Image 1 (tube, rainbow, N blue to C red):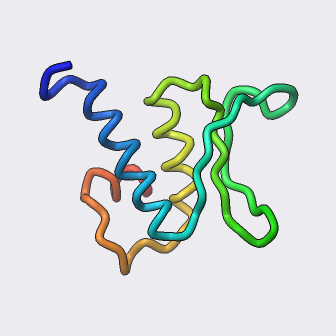
Image 2 (cartoon, rainbow, N blue to C red):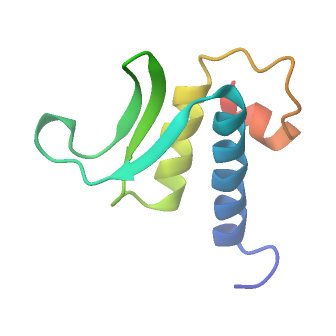
Length: 90
């Protein structure tokens, strides 16, 4: 993949969102989803810990969407978040 390639940008966005999640103390996991949860993922709380569980079969662009939606509910004003990622969170 060459620089400027949309696939590279999506992977970078995903990595930066995962870093924001880590800073917030939100665990991100990629698991196969079946049954009523098939096809997406989202934010949940397990034993007091926030988690974002994402269907590992999703395309990277859809992983970015699910993770950005989940993290959008957190207060990130006091964190350094790159402008492009902050825009995804709003």
